Length: 259
Image 1 (cartoon, helix red, strand yellow):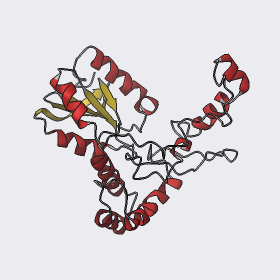
Image 2: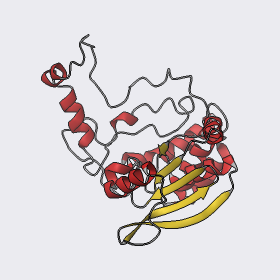
Image 3: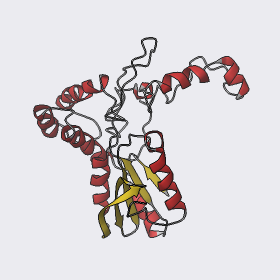
Image 4: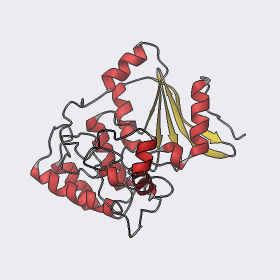
């Protein structure tokens, strides 16, 4: 079982987002301190004071891409989806007011979501795919506009992961290290909650002659980071992603030396 840049635990995912933003020079010391003092990420809903400072936090993601901090944003003047604020919180109730994350640009071409949305809304394409046979009155989008009614999301899937580990399933959790939406910081906090013994601590793995990322082998789980990858690892780091899949399928550790 492979889990990539995934929402695993509301509290640590949210805490990790803020810590990652501060550590990567996205937000100021002042804003970081205010969020830490006014927000309780164990709560189901934010307080008014927390909501106010989080609005400041989200402002930065009008101008940079949270899902890939160091790649360009979409500046297509014809795009209705360019420079839209994404929903960026794991807990759907906590941040239900931010409901535009489906509009974010993604991938090496930051406008690719515009292209795919336009393409998949063409009547001839939908006809060829046998899609939209009921003639829905709204356009297809990458994710649903109406996420405010999603009320059955558990606050944590760590109990599920514990059951899978106990059942003997191989589990690899991987994380692109330039993703600010579900950052490597959040995943490390979450895995710490599991309390697993470390069999092999933080070690580099290699993508040919270059370091591809870092890995930790726990008793029952392997954690892998992918250097320079955003939220969708195969989009930003296809070679590293292929190595990851290959080694997972053959149940072999990632290369520990250049090759």
